[in-house]
Length: 173
Ligand SMILES: N[C@@H](CCC(=O)N[C@@H](CS)C(=O)NCC(=O)O)C(=O)O
Image (cartoon, rainbow, N blue to C red; front, side, top):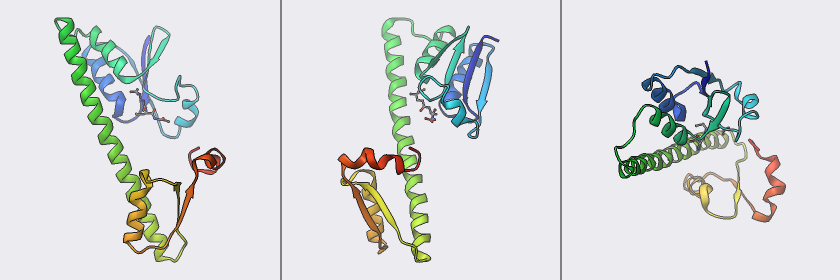
């Protein structure tokens, strides 16, 4: 099989491509990477991300570009250039909304998990420390909540010029 789609084993950005490929009647290998496999696979990805689309030995990333390419094959296109433009504008608007929702949800999940941990630490008298830049940004809501909740914490503010020195000691970097 010369067509292959590689993505995580969940819906996300790969799911619309799976739908489109099936709608277009294109036979493809549906490769699903588990979270355990991902760190190893990531290094082999062109930009360290998925979905990755492969056709006749050539590979490409970027879900929307791939979706447009498969849509053309399935004749899911406008009747004029103007209709194509309108279709692209609708897709890009939906994508803007999707990106904002996912950023919001991710922030909400991170804040909830953090606060649960902080509450646990304060209950068992462990010290709480919040490290962030010396600006409002994403940490400000956490500073507010900690102060509002009367939870004592060390408010460590890293100057931007020290960031590259501090970065290697952070999780996920
Ligand atoms: N603009 C890219 C974004 C790709 C992207 O964010 N992929 C995520 C999964 S939805 C990913 O590979 N995350 C894993 C990582 O960055 O390590 C696209 O639309 O394909």
